[in-house]
Amino acid sequence: MWYVVSSAAYLAVIYLLLVPFKHEAERNRSRTQTAFNRLITIHLMLWTAYPIVWILAPTGIDAIGQDLETMFYTILDVASKVGFGFLSLNTYSKIERIGAVAEDLEPTAPMR
Image (cartoon, rainbow, N blue to C red; front, side):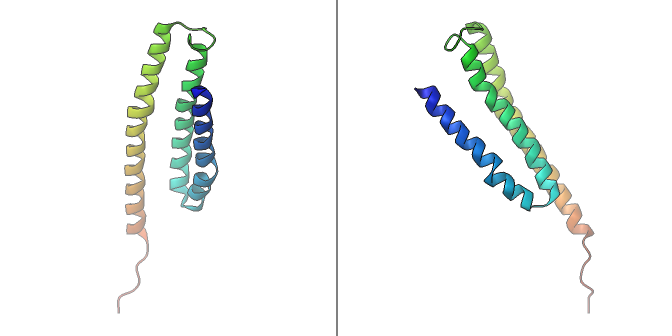
């Protein structure tokens, strides 16, 4: 039952990321759209692996053992939380630098 509930919640998150949030990113400048697309792709790949591991583990079809299940969950936890956190912070700092350079390059109004 909880698998169904959590899968429904995850599908709602996927919808939000791929429809309204993606449209909002597309309305922004191209530098944020590219960064958003990269982050969303990585996020969806990592978080989609969780239910796949659950299905393959002894709780699902028992295709992998408990040791592999634990290893996969540990790797996924580190990659999806710590790794994605560092990646998003790095992306944010790059966007901020690009924005600062773009502001410096914009022509200013002539002084009177």
